[in-house]
Length: 295
Image (cartoon, rainbow, N blue to C red; front, side, top):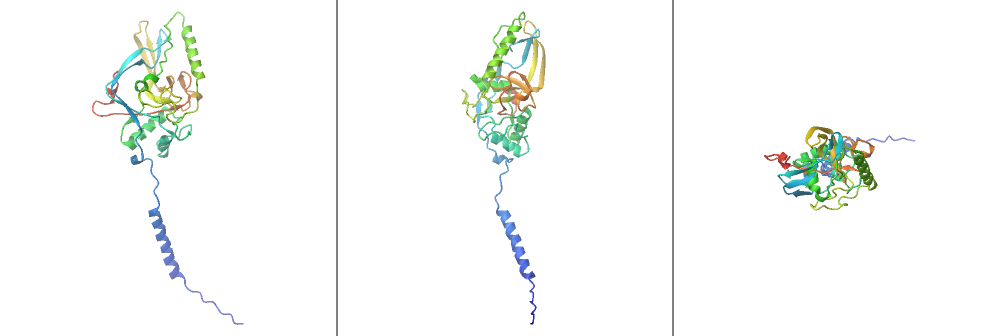
């Protein structure tokens, strides 16, 4: 039997053109592939809906822990003048909006994942400041947390006066402690922990949604301890800027790093159900935003 050797052909001339064709097709596919949106680009960020309030005056009970002869008292009533319009987000910052900041690595993830269409919760004061910084960068505007007075001005009829309504009686301070206990107990009975969808608490008279709902909102105001004499004259004032004021169903103050007030860090009042925020847009034209508030 004769065995015939099979003559092997050199396939190199065929392999090289095929390889080059594959590389060319790969490069073309990369060029034609869709580009995922970069959430950090300002062109991808939709400006939030806002409400602009005209200049005006606000008469309200100021923030602070006031003591007369070391006995707690209701904070005094003051009138604040707003010399310029105040522009505030109509809704609280949502889960989706905050997620863009997290995706851009400019914000820490919230403590609570939350559902789309609800306000972001489980965020600290520092988280809110970081979001405002990011929002300012991507929109080329200046965004910030509102002050306590600005929040009260925007809240209108939904701002809660936290006075106990008792005449100061140094001879019987127990009356105040009892009234304080009853007020806190009543607040605890109305707690509703689950955040509602945006708009779930409706609009106030200014058209701003969900003021004094079940998400307390961080403000940029420092908590303070104020001592006055028997005549009501200021003796001393001690700001504590590691503790910031929040507004909601009632005013409270919480350490700046706390994301869940029920776990601790609540300095004043019953711990809020949820911690969130909304921002104001600042006007930094000559005259400055300090003109917004007449002190």
